[in-house]
Image 1 (cartoon, one colour):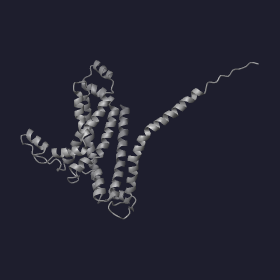
Image 2 (image 1 turned 135 degrees about the vertical axis):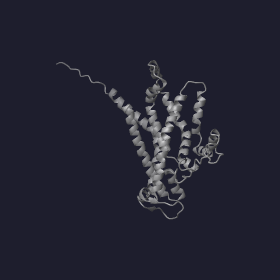
Image 3 (image 1 turned 90 degrees about the vertical axis):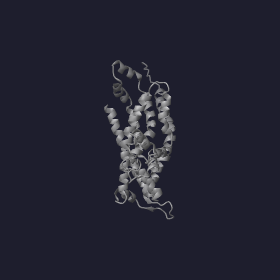
Image 4 (image 1 turned 120 degrees about the horizontal axis):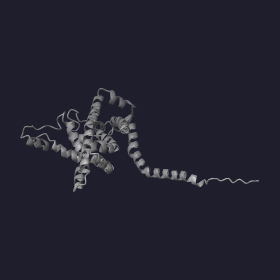
Length: 318
């Protein structure tokens, strides 16, 4: 009888990848666990608490217990003629502010990053100089810019405009004019935040391979052509992140309004966050303030998802 030998491959080698895959997964979960717990503790739990409070009438200084009213707060905020106009006006101011700040701040961040992405002597000083406003607290920046926008001739901006025009430009009430107040706050916010976006874009610029610029120079491409066909395509993912984070920051506008205008004049600078804080702590209606924050968070999430989808589609097409 002939003996046949059956060769079987060792099974240990096949099992190792599965064991290693499971180990990598466990390590990834452990590394991400602190961040997940922080998100749950500081985002998810407060949102759930705000939603529960929005279903009740809660008075901070009242001895009586909260009264459950269900979705009544949301109905009054969105549809009641006594409350809905100020909410929709605040939301419009938020969107207007974002439409001003996001494109201007992003464009300035790209321009500054391109200028500072040079191997020049003392370039570190200029990078620090343009990033410096980000370090200061927004409350301090708002106080300083309130003095700059002072309506009398002692205001720095009015004094400067009067000096360069030899008195032809009269002093303006930058924060007291409904047509200028929101624009003035936007200018201050752009100055205070452009350094943060500049650093992110600068990091993206330094990730672009220099060989691409060398190839473009060999093809005799001008600086402008290199910017359009090398720099911008290389910054696509960075710009998507910058635009999204700038949109979120601009929509949560509160500090500047609270310090500089208190929502005025004529509600021209009031925002949803300002109205929520006013309802909760000035009008002593915590439920209504919580309902405003819940609605606003859902609106921001919707805008972010739509923006993310559009920007990703543009990136894939290009």
